[in-house]
Image 1 (tube, rainbow, N blue to C red):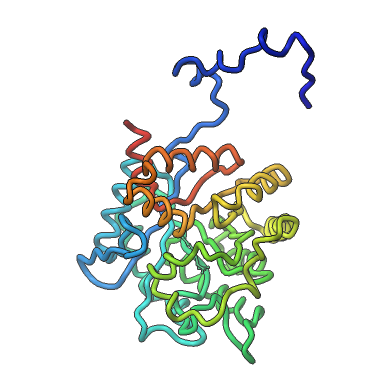
Image 2 (tube, rainbow, N blue to C red):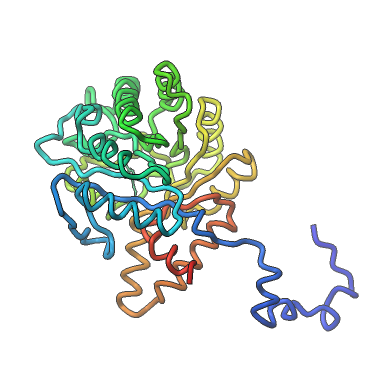
Length: 334
Ligand code: PBG
């Protein structure tokens, strides 16, 4: 704690001295943002030469695999360490059990194989969850009108295995089923994939900020009800610590807090309690808010975005998923 005696207070002490010029502000700056802190989420869609705008996320597109590879190359050239892939699944390939998720020839796996032939210096993160593949938009399999945890685990295990075989470097389960990290870790190890990393979406909240993402992967209109029986209640913080503890114990190499900006307190307590690599996801709704306000001339996109990033760092995040990673990387290099 601070001990402030009279010799430490005004007028002897003036806090503004350390803010008086750029060079001194640089010297006393406590946190810094680097391009090495950024992870770019990307949407992939079937086809060739396709670049479809996501309406609710200006500047974000769904790319067919050929153009996606070009985007990944740009990210690599800018020094971004990793990208996270999210597939847009055609309606006729969706089913109630989401079995397309573990088809070794699905869009994501075929794309991974192509990426790995051309690109080697950037980490590829894949999402493990059934929602892009289910007709009901849920991350789990429904039995008797409920999301069945243990039946879903079997599907997630198979999904993780096809992704790793196709070349994923980091498996990122975002489904919030209980026990999935342990089951996936064991499956990977049994298949001699002990080098594959697991980034667990450990504290993922049932959030309305995911709206534009569900628009991007076209799962929103299909979603029946909400995800509150598996994603966390926004009111809870202690529960996040328990979730993180379990996932670390089950073998997660890194943990994620999601959404980002409204959950900075969770990032801080997780980092302080566990000291493990802790990532944050600035989700689609956060991006959409910033973009919409800047389109209206109400906020400056660049400075506001940069501010949100340094706030993530200050809160304790080691890396940040952000749809603006490419813009940020360019600004950081200027
Ligand atoms: C799917 C998934 C979601 C996001 C990432 N993976 C949506 C959801 O849980 O409904 C959201 C990302 C974003 O909003 O940017 N399991």
